[in-house]
Every structure is written in C-alpha cells, then in structure tokens.
Length: 234
Image (cartoon, rainbow, N blue to C red; front, side, top):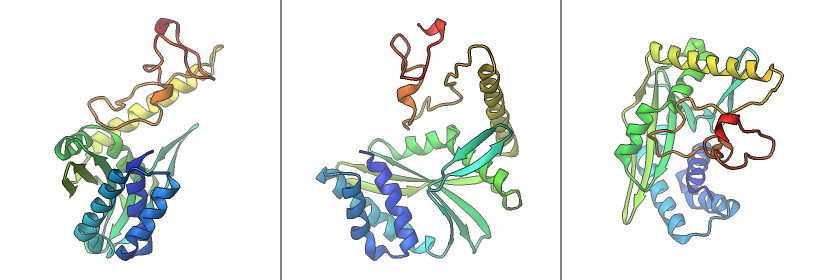
C-alpha cells in the first residue's frame, strides 16, 4: 500500500475539483480503492491534507492547472524519456510555470528537502519541461513535504530547487550517454540489457519502483524472469 501515492492523488483531485470541502469524500474513496485500512495512517493523511488545504490550497486555486500527475514524453532519437511531475501549475501573478514535487515522510523534513536539492528527480522535471516547451523555460521546481510523526503533522514547501543551464546540460549528456550505451549493447550478438545506475537514489530516502529488478538487488542470486546476469556479478 502506497500511502504517499494516495496523498499525491488527493492533492491533484482536490485541485481538479477546486473544492476543499470535498476532502473527506475524495480521500475516503482513494483509501478504499487502494485498500488502505490502517486507521492511524488514514487519520494522519486526513490531517496532513487539511493542513495543506489551510496553508496552500487557496493560493493554488488562483493558478491555472497545466498537468496533474501526468506522464510527459521527451523524444531522444531512438529513446523516449518519461517524466511524471506531481503538479504543474501556471502562476498568473508571476507569469511563471511551477512544477511541484511532493514527498511524504515520517523521518525528517530537512533531510527530505536536502535530498531533493542533491538528487536529480527535479533536475529531470526541469530539463524535460524545457525540452517540451522551449518557449516557456523554467529553472526551478518547488519541493513540498508532508511530514507526520507521533502527534506532529507538518506540511512545508521548501526553497525552490534551482538548476543552472550547466546542470541541465550535464544531466542531458549523461542521459544520452546511457541511452546510447543501452542501444549499443542491444545491437551486439548477445543483446542483454542491464540496468545502469545514474545517480539512482544513493544518499536519498526515496524508494525506487525498479528496485526489485535492479542488478544490485539481484547480485549473488537469480535475476528476475526475462533478465540475465553479467558474468562478473555471479
């Protein structure tokens, strides 16, 4: 059960409905759909969403919704690079596009915000957006943390994460390098494709949807069905 995913979905649906009054209706439906029956987590989530509504919802309703948890595709020759920002809004007061990245934690707000600054998830969002919309370029993403531990709920938007043109160029070069490496290996006589670590989630508290098929996870044991293990990892 991905409690964080339910909170992500709830913020998007509330914005789409433009009504904080529908919080419990929307949240209850999402919890049932995801089969979340842990009363403690349900209550924590409802409290965090209430804080979010009181703190930021009214402000965000003034903005134009561009994308809500939608996958965007960036074509890179033979490859398609995918990004899925939580929310993309246009702020008419500043004339700028705002990309939001929401994280949930029971650990530490400051650590999560620090990790977002250091890792490349938001770099990918900024880079991808600029590739798709070169006439509406941005250089920041806004981190948002839902924190709940014990009796302390907290919702905080951190300092916007800034990426320079050099940061984005470095990211693009690394992505292209890995893409062409995969293409080259696929074209060889033994076309096995192996997952390659870029910055991954090292030094981060964030999980990875592909951890169960990662080459690191399967070192010294059988790889998942459909994959082969390199000789040096056996």
